[in-house]
Length: 338
Picture 1 (spheres, rainbow, N blue to C red):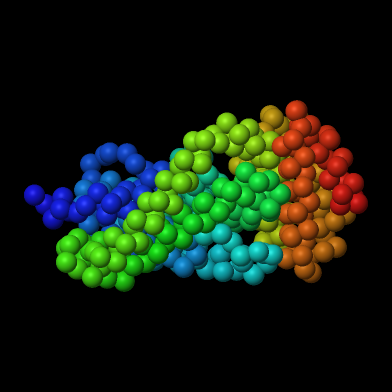
Picture 2 (cartoon, one colour):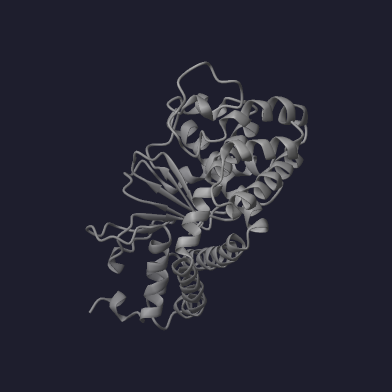
């Protein structure tokens, strides 16, 4: 019997919890796992590649990366969030950052699990610049979700559960690393084993509460997510535009995005296909020209005011039988006096 097999189920669960939280509970051949300090954990039979310590994320997990993608690369993203936080009205909620092999989807913020996904290609221009812009956009979603949580009770409950879940995850990861990694905690008589086992009980409980909530409220959360998505995308793009001081920041950093992602008058062209990104495009130019531009000196106040206004509109859309883009644009123009 391997040493890992001697671990009680509750201890093994905390590692599985990390895998589950970042959406990677699959079963390819088990690669070597390290926890930031390079200590191997292959004996545990995990199916992930690498975890990294982080001060800006609850946890960072790198999947399927070659040796050129190291935990040191995460520092670039942490420095970016330090700069971003300086213009934000609220402290960013800790998310789990999941770096994946390239996919058709460039980035993702998932409020259900409080996670952000990015590509994990070799960092460096232009990939790093592109990924940074995507991360700023996704953290814009994270910030806006906080405003939504104040207006919409269902999101408020979800935010509390995710905050507790993320905190427990971060605490366990930090504790294991402080003892030299996962392998140092496998001996039942070790101090690390005892401490992690105690923390694990609270973590498993938090994770179970989150999953129960998501299952019980799946239909309501799916419907709500569709209704608020256009405001989510508008706000996330606005955060990126303000961070880079450029109304066209998103398409300059990521040229293959559509023209409806800018905050200025669009050139005459066929209407883009319906999407959450473009649904409120008619509001973007007047919002920037008549409201944002004159307030660039205080981005924190600007993002707070717009976050609250957009969240109030999201609450109205959530209560409507059939939300209308035109109605939302009219109400927001009236609320912001533009």
